[in-house]
Amino acid sequence: MKRLALALALSVLPLAFALPKTVAPQTRPRTVGPAGAAIPVGEEEVVKTDVDLVVLDALVLQKKTGRVVGDLKREDFTLAEDGVPQQIKHFSQDSLPLSVVLLIDRGGCLDPFGEHVRHAAREAIARLKPEDELAVMAYHDSVDMVQEFTRDRQEVSDALDRVPGHDEEANHCLDKAFYEAAHYMVKAGNPVGRRVIVVITGVTSNIDCFGGPSVGEAKREVYESGSVVCGLIPRTAGQRVESGVMRAMTGVAGAVGVPKLRVNDLAEETGGEVLDDKPEKLDQTFETLIEHLRTRYQLAFVPTNRKHDGTVRKLKLTVKPAAQKSQGKLAVKTRRTYVAPKS
Image 1 (tube, helix red, strand yellow):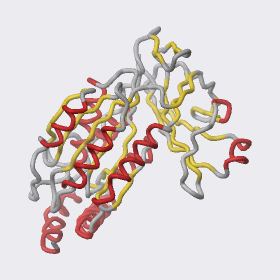
Image 2 (tube, rainbow, N blue to C red):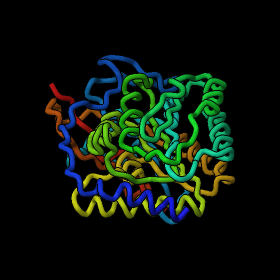
Image 3 (cartoon, rainbow, N blue to C red):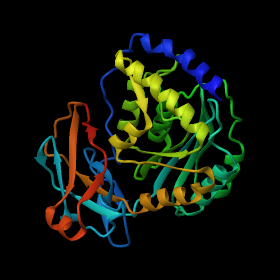
Image 4 (cartoon, rainbow, N blue to C red):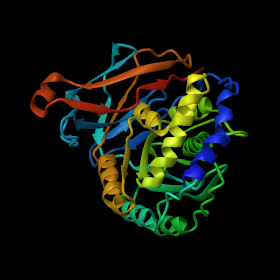
């Protein structure tokens, strides 16, 4: 294992001194459907969408205990765009269908997708609602579509058995993986659904892989897709060694200005989370993730700034002090930015 880790470090370290790639500006907004379309969000409530409607998916946790807070109301939240207060037009919880891409790592020294993890994935899939859709993708040096979006749980279960074999000589090309997953989400995901990318990997950081999109382009694609990024890490001694080597390598790369991609950063920026545990305990961890997805709040607003200028705008969603007084100090996990439409 030590020899493999050392070889990995020596093989990728020179890449840290390559010139970073130029990243094009962000251009595509996250939209929820055509103007005037109706989204059913419950038996009595229907929200009319607008081409400028911005959707947020938020998880609220108690800071002290980490307990999910699932009983808040619209009036408990405040929302601002670039510091300007916004009116929350739509508010619901667990009413919109999920579009989930399972993104499975097949490269590196260790295989993170063993039988325990495969079983945990099947158990988690069974807990989703009938209207939720799933797709399965696998990656190392390249990205393979194993199963396109489907609501058929048996098709997804069968796809988990068709995931390509592990290749210990292959890289963990996170830039390619997230770019392709987000691009597919925009192209094929439910236009009115909540978008989630769940990556199953033992390595959570890397720099650009040759022959693919840059780290900046991959991040842009994720942010513009409106996807929430979550990670599941099967934690073992070997995994910690390999992941530590990759973190050290990306740290050196970052010190000389080479862009790096970290799953934790994507999760933080999109309002997701990264969970880890021993492979034999991932059943419970995967169940926790599904529970969190189910207790997230969905909010939408039409910006007071109606300019179609393609700019990146900062969002801040908070829980009002009165609600925190009864619940304790709360942490809100949600997207931090969005891209305005561009005429």
